[in-house]
Image (cartoon, rainbow, N blue to C red; front, side, top):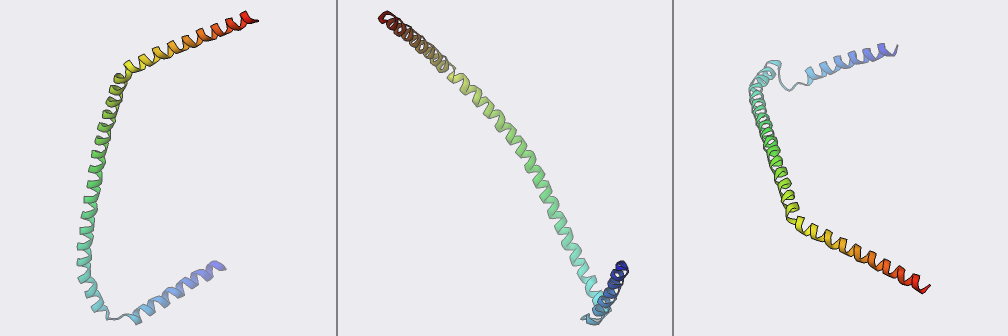
Length: 123
């Protein structure tokens, strides 16, 4: 029952809207058709311009994406080379620091051994 009422409401509303539109039209049908025909050409021209602009935008975005990928790839390669060069440059200092750390550890071990021997001799 509700479906029938809904469909009847749409039908009556559509008829009422159509009649209201016909009665409230600011010009006759012939004048309105001529106006629409004249503006159709303008609308089609504007749509063509808009389409061309969107295609240009799409092509620009595609080109920017391609160039961006190349730039990122180049940047990534440069960073990898820079890191490798930096590692090679600090290698001697790193090895020297490791030798110094080993000497410090040996000295600490000797001091601990000496300290333990002194404590054992006192007891």
